[in-house]
Length: 91
Image (cartoon, rainbow, N blue to C red; front, side, top):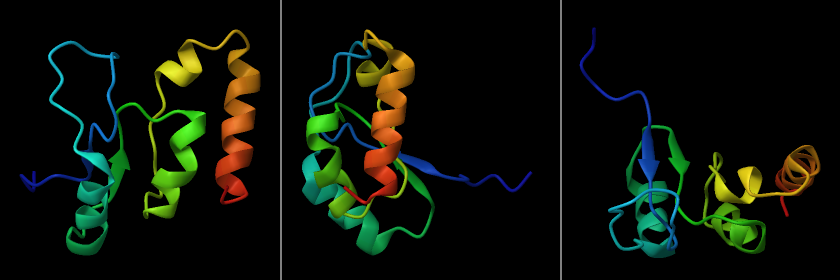
């Protein structure tokens, strides 16, 4: 075992209620810092929704996690397809 991280989670970028006892949002300036200074792969997390997904991607995230946006959707399959299409189009 190498003992190092394979990837990191960066966030929460926005307010989130997915978990209890979450720290305050770190905002997009922290994401900018990670993009510019950390060489490990990362997943942007925390409060990411369809309405702010474009911002997160424009700030350099190549991998994102949207929990509530998906599991809270009336049509989960449709929500995932919409989000995938947005990401593939580069929003």
